[in-house]
Length: 89
Image 1 (cartoon, rainbow, N blue to C red):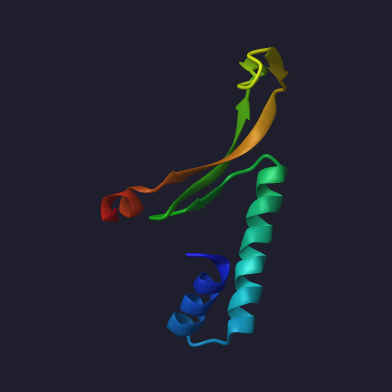
Image 2: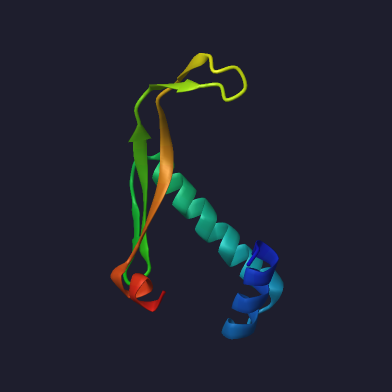
């Protein structure tokens, strides 16, 4: 499912216009992004938790040449499914 399909489904289920559904989805994504940038986490009970995880610096290999390259440390977004969501899959 892509963004347009999700917007259409939310619009249909909630009985709102696609423009309103798009605005709501954009607002949700922006709120989650700002919270994660600030170092927080977003928990939706029954659905899951969005959080930030730190990856340590490490050495990798260029698959074409086999040369060792250094990969910098970085922060990555992480999602852990809640118990209710995991049970439905």
